[in-house]
Length: 126
Image 1 (cartoon, rainbow, N blue to C red):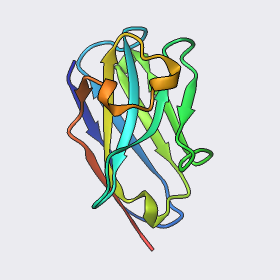
Image 2: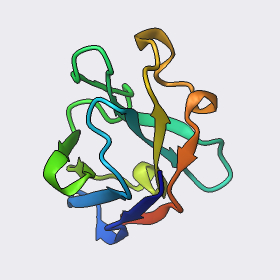
Image 3: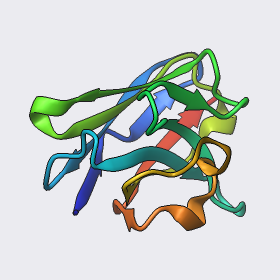
Image 4: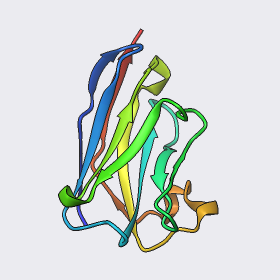
């Protein structure tokens, strides 16, 4: 599968952005889908994902309550709605996929995702 991330940009602190990840083929019940981010000078970290088992969502503590992952299966697209952004959210955001299931306890492990989008830069100004 090929993933195309978009929607990044410059936003003021407290603002919102919605990122999109368009897949080249259907991902519903086929791929585990997630979002990761990499801030300047830091390692890439998990942000959000859909659990394979029941398609419920899981978030990193740093974004919980502010970010929402969602999907439109008809468009083969996964979204990341980001609200109440802070400068600490500045990063390149990547969507990622793995064909099949990732067990819930390992869903935050980037090494288990096989396919990555090109990344979209989000810059939050103070």
